[in-house]
Length: 308
Image (cartoon, rainbow, N blue to C red):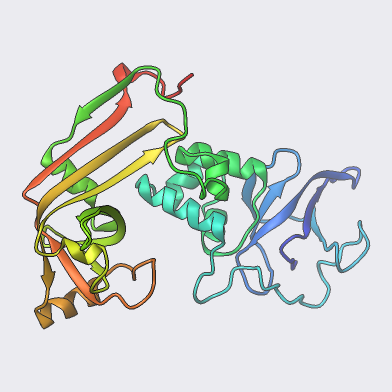
């Protein structure tokens, strides 16, 4: 038995030969198209890993009329959309699913269990361009504590925090240890500066945490470069519209330009990402926090996180 992505797996009744169940093959595990398959069943929209038995056959919509079993024909080349060995090429949905899964500290197996799908299919979604069904997105969004809209990227042009407020919010201060944990190893934060013309500005920057310092790259003469040689304020936060919760951390301390050649080389080698803004940004600025404060909004007394 061999199949394409998009083919139909049909399981027939042994007694009548009529279709008992059918579904679309949405994941292949072998380059030659042989089983097992990830199948999205038409009656439930659930994706499961299937090892077809003798009562199953494949219909190839593009390679023969419906109802004719061509599963024993000559090997069919696997289409480019199928999982291939080598570098993954995730689509937008897959990237957002992977980010949300990692943000919640979930393994693929645990996330797949919560979403009631095959771990192999979740791996396929995260690593290859795909267009999962609405039912699949709903289950993923529920498992990851987010929304279908967010997974599809429809909210990229709106600022966070447009969800409803919690019915009973609880705002609490974070300890310095909690603030350090939330800063994590890298991300995007905002640096507050006074520009050379005397105007205040807040600039988003890609940052790294190195030896408890907050470091970022910029261009000499830029607004962000004006932080060097001053007491700087740096802020990072996260807002979850789906749960109406969030946190913010503020770091205050002296900022300085990193000029030591070995130190610069080390920063470049260990940077998690290049600046999203692009361009030639070779000046590193380090902030040594002397004060770390933060706050978190959560539901009070275990109340549900829906507002009104």
